Amino acid sequence: MSSETESSIKRDTPNFKAVILHNVMSDWNAGDTEVSDTAMKRMRRGLIEQGYDVVLAPVRNDVAENLRDLDPKQHVIFNWCEGLDGQPNAYDAVPPVLEAMGFAYTGAGAWALGATTDKAITKQHLIKNNVPTPIARVFATADRDGWTRYPALVKPAAE
Image (cartoon, rainbow, N blue to C red; front, side, top):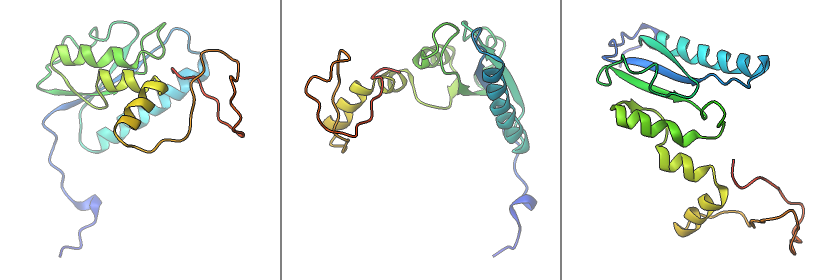
């Protein structure tokens, strides 16, 4: 067995470029922008350290805008989009565009992203597939409607 350390192992140069597809939202404040930029720069640095060429592709509303000149056979998309400008929870809007353009991408597809933003639908699928879930109830109004189990976690069903 070799005593090579990980830092001394020669890595092959990847045969594709990494594209970090990330949000730029018009309603972000300076703190939101800083958090996003810091995370994106950290990811970019990590990919570069692993030998990847990295392309940054900011997205407001048009997912395809900064991807049109890229070859899907030579680029893989790291999908860091959490929505579109003015639609902050439209996670599921990005994958169909990437698929239509022929790109391979990280993360879940449109159906999974859409379903998991609705906790009630997600719970139905988990129960249907015999996955244990905590006791829960969905309310259409702020009225407790007979709920008596406390303490309780209260969360919006769709987010």
